[in-house]
Length: 401
Ligand code: NAD
Ligand code: MG
Image 1 (cartoon, helix red, strand yellow):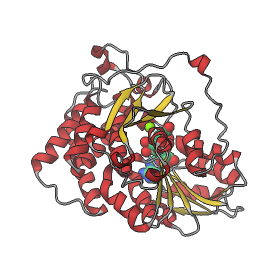
Image 2 (tube, rainbow, N blue to C red; image 1 turned 120 degrees about the vertical axis):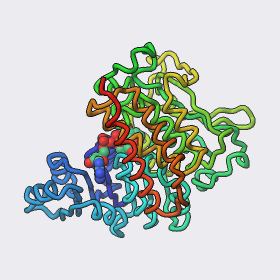
Image 3 (cartoon, rainbow, N blue to C red; image 1 turned 135 degrees about the horizontal axis):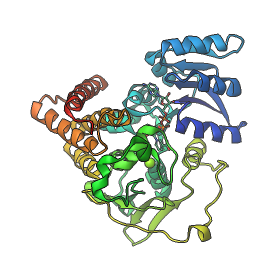
Image 4 (cartoon, rainbow, N blue to C red; image 1 turned 180 degrees about the vertical axis):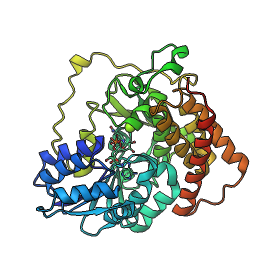
């Protein structure tokens, strides 16, 4: 039986993970859960799954949770440090990294360093730390399994020997020509470009195919999500720029593809439901039931494909450039984007300002020429903090409407 630590239990990936665990009570024991501050939701999870440990980042939330759990065996801890400690705790063998954004870096990295089987949903952690992350996994023997549906699809389309080399894949040696990362194009794919600036947070979060947390929903509307995934794919599959392409596929039936030298293209298909990649990672290399219905091709009818338009998705271009500019650029971009998305969700900036702010912050960091070697998590966090400060300054100067 696997003993699981679920980081980000109250989020969208957290909920899908718990849904799979409900299907498989014999296989997995939920050892620990963490959340930021949603007491009601974490309490319900603790009452149902009775984990040994529950951690809340927010101190007062943790006190309320502890008070509600006095008669339970669940131990309640608080603070960001405790989240990272529980991620590395020797009582679990598997860690689901499902915290959103840069807040996930330290705990996810702690799980990697501790040599866990790490189910990686928190793409921002890899985008921020790249080579450090891959090297830490190699040093500790941590097994990384990609939860992000595209990377999970690619992983499933790779030969077993390449799956075992994650982070150090020899794609051309395995006869692989290209990785094709698919994306739906989000809710604004067919909107006239002139209407983009007026889009509200509610419209941006209404994804046509996927039901997700707010930050990744906005990232899907700008296609920054695909850009972060491009960077994620580069690290996981050790791709060159020539080996990695993005293809728009509005139906979200194909979750990504691998194109081989002989002309074969392998695609992984399924419902747009994260329970599928989560179940795949939880049980790999076996297969278990996830509760997701198989595809009905007669209902789907057609699959279509297109190129992503730079004028509509400047964030995708920024991320693809940053990917090859260096670690400083991807760490900076991720930080600026998080701050800009939060400001957009708070209705402080326009939808189209997200890309402008990200581009300006990258230029500012480059001009400041203060990018020292990013060879430690502390150095990464310091640059992340600097980029966030620059982004906040710029937001103050941007007009609301
Ligand atoms: P969400 O906003 O629904 O949930 C985020 C979780 O992180 C919550 O449990 C929250 O309590 C926790 N959290 C937030 N801030 C925190 C902090 N400062 N410290 C510790 N914990 C904190 O997000 P989500 O949609 O579930 O996404 C989680 C991660 O998975 C993201 O990195 C996202 O890119 C990735 N992902 C999500 C989906 C999806 O379908 N939702 C798909 C692929 C990848
Ligand atoms: Mg994805």
